[in-house]
Image 1: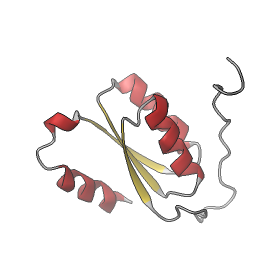
Image 2: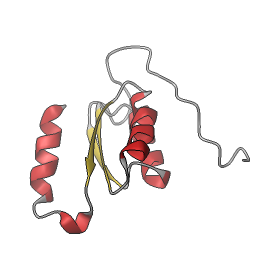
Image 3: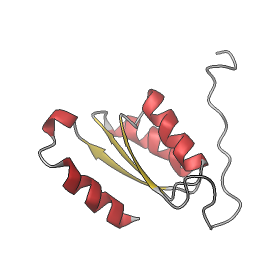
Length: 101
């Protein structure tokens, strides 16, 4: 790998109070278990989001890896295995996830 494709090392927050441009927000990232979606989820965590909900169609092992990368910043993470075509009421899912944070 070259430096352009290597992931940045986690930099856990030094304080329990969230700070940054996204604090104290909650982010919902579809496709967030791996790849670009996970990179976006990690960047939200790095920028201070207090919670990130990962929604994807990936397996548990892939979710566990992606979740760990986000949690390294002290951000709470929830995961949902679901394809967008299977969502009958995504607004309910998002509201219930947001209440967790």
